[in-house]
Structure formats: C-alpha cells, structure tokens
Image (cartoon, rainbow, N blue to C red; front, side):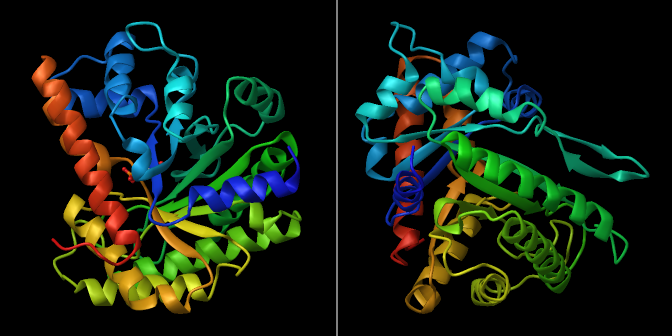
Length: 337
Ligand code: 13P
C-alpha cells in the first residue's frame, strides 16, 4: 500500500455525504449496552447483533466505512457469508479498533492512558490480511475542575498517538486518531473548549514530531459541549461556533476530514450539531466534517433488535438506515429535525 493509496482511502472515508459507522465496542462496553436492553453478552449475541447492522440493505449509500472490533473481522453471517465480503459488496471500507483499551496511568490513578502500541505492527499484519484498510485508536480525557486532565496524561496519550499513527501508515492502514474529551461531569462549555484545545494541540504536536502524513489520517474527536451534569444549555449555534473555533486553531489543513463521535449526546443533538457546523462553516473549512458515530447510530436499532424476531430484525435495520440517512444529510447541512 503506497502513501497515495492511503491518502485515497482517507479521502473516501470522509467524503460527503457519507460517514463512518463505529461498531467496535469492546466486549466490556457491549456488555453494558446489551444489559440495558435485557440481553446477555454472549459471543453469539454479539455476532448476531453485528450481522443485523452489517447486512442492512443499502447501508453503503450513507456509510463509507465501518470500524469493527477484532473478533468481528473474521466472523460470518448465520448462513456462512464473511462479514468483510458483505461490506465490500456494499462498497464499505473495513476498519478495525487496534487499541487494547485503557488503564490508569502510574502516579495518576484517576486518569487513563491507552494500551496497545506494543506488538502493534505484528497485529496489523493479521488485520490487513483479513481485509482491514484503516485503524482506530482512542484515548479518553475526563474533566475535573482545573485539576484534570493533567498535562502529564495529555502528553502520555499524545505520545501514544505519535507512535501508533506512523506504525499504521507504514504497515498499510489509515489511522484514525481519536482523542475524546468525555462528557461525564458538570463542567462548562468553556471547560470543554479549553481541554479539547489542549488535547488537540498536544496530539498534533506529537504527530508532527513523528512525521505523520497528515493527508493519510483522520481525526475523530468530540464536539465541544458542556458536561452531561451541567445545568446550563447552549444553542446549536454556540456549540458549532466553539467546536469550529477549537478545530481551526489546532488541526492542520492537510487532514482530509474530521469525523465526530456522538459521545453521550442524544441522537438529535449529535445530528443537529453536525448539521449546523456544516451549514455555517463548511465553505470556509479546509477539511470535511462528518461523523463516526456509535451510539448516535446504533442506540435505537439495538433496542428494536433486542426484542427479537424477524420483524424486529428488519425494523432495526430500517431504523439504522434512517439514522444513517439523517446523519448523512447533516454532513451537507441539509438535515431537518
Ligand atoms: P460514540 O459515537 O458512541 O461516542 O462512539 C464512538 C466511538 O467509536 C468511541 O470510540
């Protein structure tokens, strides 16, 4: 895979009106999501759930790529067709989550650093053989007053991105770099703005230092919003303005696109914020603004599917397609609630 090939894949992933479906929950995360809809976290339930998502007819109209958890990469439908083949036929690019989760940082027990850099090149060789063309690595940052995240932990996670991204590009995968400022807590919009700025500045410093090819990567990050326990509400215009302001002052122009995660936002809010950003700012921005949602696309379909039976299977797929369509419209500023 040449650098030009990687650049082409990165551009295709963020090309409007499409975006990315993140369906790469680790077994721990999916356990919570299944429990909330009354399902047991068995390997077969995970496979069957992902079969429902992947076999959604016409998904490729709105979805450019899917991020899979490693166990899903070589799985098949109940009648024996590899998932990767179905995605290829829909024109959907296959990606894989390559980080191995997070753990507390020594001396900073309340903060997390991302694991999974050791042995990464070797694992990537397996994933590319299985059909993966892009990768995702996520780091999380919680806000607690002015105390957290600390500079040390921002630095440690940024350093990991600085190692991960070049390994991906050398081994033939487009890296998605995903620093996420979490919504947990009562912090203000301004706090989120300040921390997102600090995190993105440090991440791009490290990427630059490590000679990353910016044209062959994607930034996946949070929309700038207040904490989920904050009592103050802001208009979509304010959220869009603050988010774009941070991005303009931290993200290099060569990046082809920024794909937002939906975090703890409601489906409606996540879609509306993306829509307003594109309506108001797309014309002046060097990158495409699109989506790489998990919860924002799969929350409702999962609830329907969990009720069981063939009708709910089809209705869940219809719901996924509807959410994908709405979010796709938001990449062009054409979504109407
Ligand atoms: P959410 O859209 O649910 O935030 O998930 C995105 C994601 O991939 C987290 O890593």
